[in-house]
Image (cartoon, rainbow, N blue to C red; front, side, top):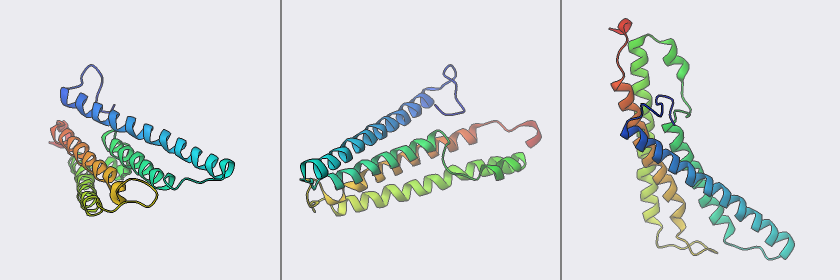
Length: 172
């Protein structure tokens, strides 16, 4: 749950964003567990059975990209992403509000670029198969694109929260 909300005061939109973020984290956790299982199988197959499967590398990359992209998007929602918060906190009330509004705009722009180019690269390689795995070569761009879309959604929601926050008396 994000820092601005409490369970009793959550709006339907806040609950929806929290649910979407929790789903992204849940998928990222499953992807990490899958990564551990695939890499565990790779080690057993290579060193115990002496027959290394060729599908483990592309599946590992897909699972890692999924965990990273969805985890990063959820970090935008929970406001646990990289940022220069000291500058905003040291500024006056009006400049602080402007800086807090600028941050989600930058994140949304980055997410939009990730979503767009991830989709372009995904569509570009759908007809090419990965050697050793029955998957399209570009499947690794799918989680990147989905993560970018989620970053945009969460950043726009964060911007909405900043713009709807009342100005304090000293800022007027």
